[in-house]
Length: 145
Image (cartoon, rainbow, N blue to C red; front, side, top):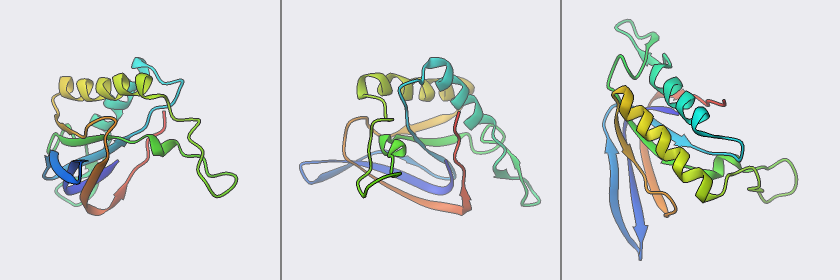
């Protein structure tokens, strides 16, 4: 998850890029799903993203959450987060959940964030996407539940 000044995602089909999500200041979350994840984990992740205090307060201290500030997030599914590079030179993807398991859980994270009050933009599952972002400082946080 990254704090951003702006971020966008384009879907590329037949050499044509179409913008499907775009935000100004807020967070961008790359969400990966593994085999043991379920709706309970997805809901917990959404709550953690919503309430994690990584946004600056008036003194420049990371003391505020997404809920306290912009309420804006771009969520992009990212199976490659579960790439295993412990041996060899080619990542293994065995820890990444199959699309039929992962897609509903990414959708559940998005739904929970919206239920909490977030404005959520998304990528599109099972497509080739170009993701662009401008970091808001060196703020990248990995959340593992």
